[in-house]
Amino acid sequence: SPMRILDMGTGSGCILLSLLHYMKEDSCLVLEGVGADISNEALQVARENAKRMELEAEWVHGDLFSKVEGKFQVIVSNPPYVRTAELDRLQAEVRYHDPRIALDGNADGLYFYRRIVEECKIYLEPGGHLLFEIGHDQAEDVAGMMRNAGFSKIKIKKDLAGLDRVVSGVYDRCA
Image 1 (tube, rainbow, N blue to C red):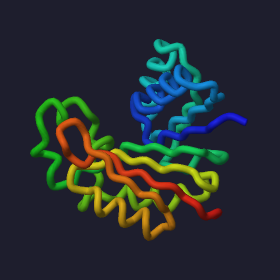
Image 2 (tube, helix red, strand yellow):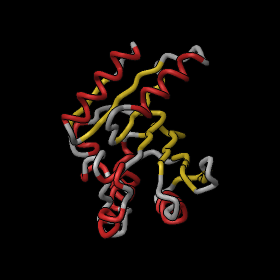
Image 3 (tube, helix red, strand yellow):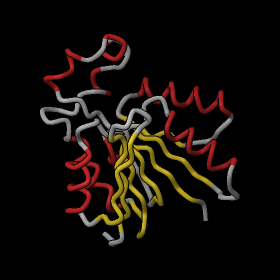
Image 4 (cartoon, rainbow, N blue to C red):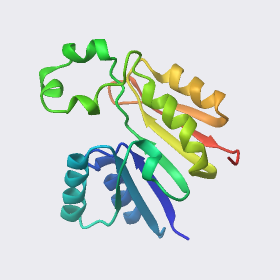
């Protein structure tokens, strides 16, 4: 059966499409990709990017998991994680390029992490992986949420600037 990958809050689809491209290139896996987003405009960009890259994916419009079906071996997400109070202080190229909905993680920047960690459990296969892009100062909070929700093998990876950037874990429990 295919390896299913869900990109929650896919936006332009760049994470999902990169995974599909590089995993397909380097393996004999049969891959299925699903990108979910609340923005129809973002999903249209994702569709166009997939077409340009000659990749197949399913695109789902809805609020987080509301329209997602089935189980996945991997769920990835780069959710909105900027604290609302910090939005107006972002660099101009971010403030004026990205829609506010793609940036605003509410008061503490962790709103979407909490929702995804709790809601993803019924969509992950046993032993499935959850990976998040995070703000540079959110690693311990997100790792703690995942640990408290039953994830194990939690890892924090740094970006090229040496800042915490990815938190991953494995869900070993069946929902």
